[in-house]
Length: 113
Length: 427
Picture: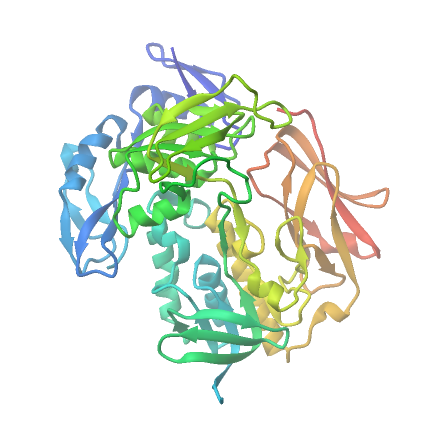
């Protein structure tokens, strides 16, 4: 049994999820069931950070993964991001690292610089 | 000394999310002579340092980062005739809409505008107003300053941190520092509940096993040069620290996420009345302040939870400022007005005043509630008479609420209306 706070709406129901049977209790509405299952089986997050940039307006370029990655891979991706350097100009949405740390997501620039 | 004098139909003070949306909206409503005054080196305001995702869900139906959200508005503004003055600080404003500016290219100069939109945003509360005791070594930052140092300038502000306040900026910084290799030892929150979004409690604290100490505050700080220890204590129901509950944390950094204050120095200079509940200007339903031709929107008016709502409020201010200019700058405030008052359980409302018989079919009111409740009724009343009521499944202080009242219902009211909450039960 795992416990989560549901983040679908501000109410923040305390969900209890049985990982084997995949049953959710404590949810105030139907949307909590889907959320609870996903959090129990394969929680995913969008990772955002910055990378070093040369010749830009600022010293750091904000970046993000284009899709959510498994929560367990956040620090693997951060290790790759720490080694990443880029040069201005960069266009928003430009792919900086493909399939970062084997996560299936691309690391993209969050803005022009 | 003769200084330069520029004339515009509309001057927007501030180029963050509020100023951008207001300027674009004014342009879309027919105004061509617009100037946007921004003190930073670029447009976008605080969004530029908010590199996390979660912006734009309401407006665009997708999760953007702060810079991505800003970019959409910046590129739209660049397609208008609005002139943007960067690196330009506004240092004076009066009720005749004369704006005194300074920048390094032109020195001091004056702008006269038919209408002005105040969009200066807010700033962080710091150590002074909350009376933090202890040493005054380095390593104590407001959470937003630390965010800027990290995300724009590229400095990790510390290795071991304690965060006071569980507002969203504090939570976001807890995650940010952890991802960058720092250790966040604790988040302390004075109140028995967090005022941050659940989503941030989960994704910024729970994901990384960072403990949240509710009903706790910082009671001592040690470190003459650099911070080396922070003491937190539990507080009682009157928010007084309880002796014997002290916990010590060896750390080099303390971040403060203890509230935001609308930045209204210019508003006060122009002698525009301020609402003590919002710390922003008193506004009518057309976003106009008590000073004719001066409008306000965004976090300078009241602190919002979501930038999406800042954008929509500012678009309204831009549209109304455009109507004011094209209508020959005649204020509708000469007409009869009524006040909107706090009823039971309501902390503030925006707008604070309504023009009777205004042009719109409905009146939009934003407000905040005092406490969490479920299955509540929001009532609009005048004296003993209930004008309108709205069901709400769930209300919380951290969530700005909105109701839309048909104007027809306000026709025969001549004093004031009150907004109150009838709770089904406190959570």
